[in-house]
Length: 446
Image (cartoon, rainbow, N blue to C red; front, side, top):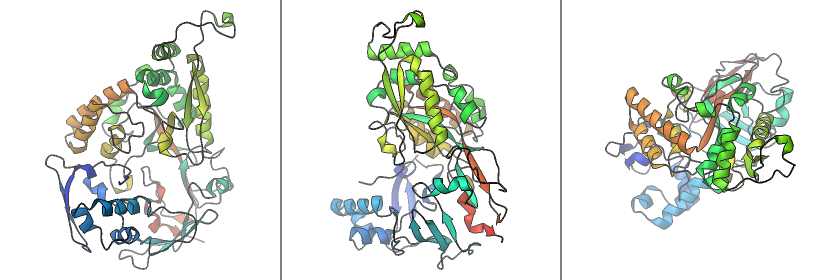
């Protein structure tokens, strides 16, 4: 009944030994399944407070029911864990959101953002700044952004027209920088894209090189799904894959659409003569979803639509402010997403977790496509330390995914990062943690 973001690493744990109220626990991995990035499994934000879960579930503790496999009680624990920490606008119950870091939540609203204040119970160094307001999706962020009403900005490039138009005097970078994550189109493994030929047809008409040039802040076309542009092994591999999909191949796309749909030659309803010997295909519609409003992604979708039209594929913009990943395969056929490299602030980016986006059955696998060879490769990659062996496994996974096409990688995700002169100690973060990774060290002058 639990709905984690991913089971990467956790699925390899054989046992967890602890007692109620203990400050430490012993975690034992299954033989041969020592997850190489195990430190990331128990970082800030990964652990939920057990006493709150128990209280919400109406239980005295969570350990005994889990050990006894009391299914009814475990179901209540799962419900509390899944939904009990959903942060919604309105009064914040501070007993429900205990802080385990230098800041605690003070209040949260659409018009006032998420207000953080120092945590009086924090045992470490006290934060330098007494109040920080975080503005995310769903708040008034996009309305305030063009006016330069923020001290620190870390957003996807093209979130608003002209990016940060009112950011004059900012000390941070003024042009988009490339993050460690890769922007890609994730394709549904059901519906229109349940047939691999349709996935290949769509990939054949996506103008990847043009998209990288026009919307990727000058980034090269990225061809890998497992390794990020920052990985030491990635540079030599990037040119080994995806070369047949660098630029649109409309004839190949039309042939794949025809093979997938069983369409024979039909007369072009527009007359056909102006198009030479070309014949029209009965169009197939692809709905591309992304979180709106994002003008850059809107323009990307329009560019893809213009390119794919000749292949008999009609692309519809199915964006929404409330779009969720589980809409893939139901409300949309493809999602524009930007994968994140793990925890750059805590160390080097590691592909072990992100590779689970390709593993059958893992929640990170949004497409739902299951390829046994890929899943086995991901499982091996997660526990392999040797660089030559990891390179071999990465190549094997890439070969299989370019054949099955669960996604279309595009380019390193461009982001805008800026901060004003009065804010000190800001360090742009490239990974999933973003620029806020050291906000407790930020200082304010004036």
